[in-house]
Length: 153
Image 1 (spheres, helix red, strand yellow):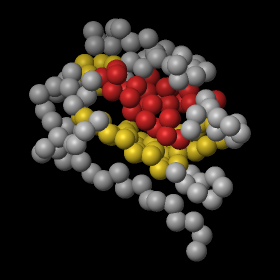
Image 2: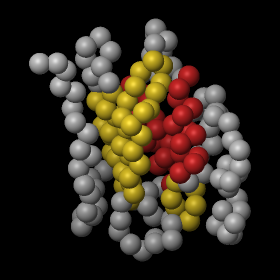
Image 3: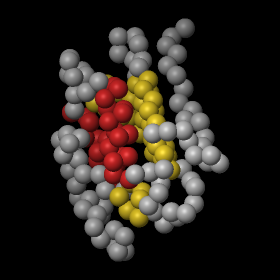
Image 4: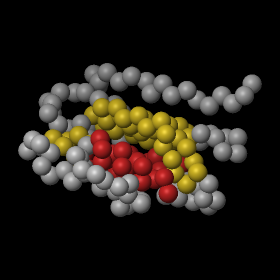
């Protein structure tokens, strides 16, 4: 492993899924292109959490875009963090915005946005969007392109 990864605790090791988002460890690595304006996108089409009232499962398609400064999120730690919501009870808004804020706290990126496209329960989808500010000028940023729920008919 390189000196960039020496401090990582999960990469290259067997790891179990954290039991909660609070228990999950998000890790970062140095940005190899800190002077370049570019976006990083993570897509999690099978995100799950629990309704905090009924305990029933909720499903979402998450899209996370960010513009790094000095740090990148280490992807295995992000996968484990997102997976830790599987048994976590929280409303859609809290999950979506909380994930975005946790990444911002770790990375201090130039910019971040997260889209939570939640599948319907009771016939109504809830989509949640949060960003830190307007996207930086000159940034090429593709649309999130997650189709809205159309139902039947």
